[in-house]
Image 1: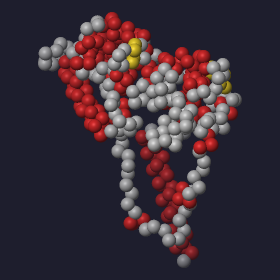
Image 2 (image 1 turned 120 degrees about the vertical axis):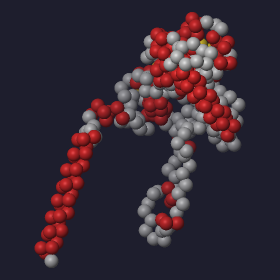
Image 3 (image 1 turned 180 degrees about the horizontal axis):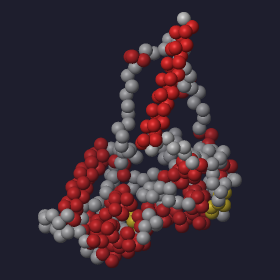
Image 4 (image 1 turned 30 degrees about the vertical axis):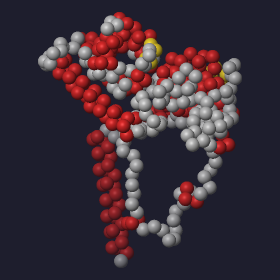
Length: 343
């Protein structure tokens, strides 16, 4: 019996060793399994806790934040945090949380100031997330806190005092006392796994119906969603038409210019997020009716508005679409691509 057990143990050990060898060989073959470097880990490890742990060194003022906010944030969130169109409202809403339709803002709802810094740093501006410096995030955070009357206009936000800021609704959050949220293991009278019906609620998309003018609430309405899908199809066909024209095809249009061809990659990477769907009132790619009055102004005017920024009756264009890392020539070429593909 002992001898048989020993053989079984040896076979198991050899099998495990061969499996590890095979895994190592596959890792080497496919180039996977490299140990993450300290620099790579630091690039992902950017979360900030309510106690301030994770905050980078730096500081920001309300005064400096005002200009940066107007440059990067006001297009969507309004000059005073009131929100443009269906974009989120950042300021106000105090004493509305008990109403049927509360206004959840930084000042009325959020429990920690660290969340504000963390979110801006990760995801803003919408057109170019992670493009702001840590110092710029400090400035903008200070200004948004000021818009909510949480700090004074001469306040200087720092790594040391951010976690000490008391948010108006901080006491409105508490640890859920219900037993079914503790995630403790069931030990008796447990549900039969074979009889459980797990239903998924996500569909793999982010609802964007609330960005459409006329949407009835900050959630995807069916009509607005259908409009978005129809516009996606229209944009897709316009893009295909542009590719056909670029390849020298026919259809009443001339081939795209060299500048337009060069601008396609910039459009795809920086402009499509707004001009592909018409967010913030921007003319949609391929929509000839929307582009016609703008084209009549001439390329010089359109390029100037794209580079310097522009606020009109039907939309707002931040400088370079919020992508200040782009050169003037890249923006000019992207305008040429959109114009020539939308005539």
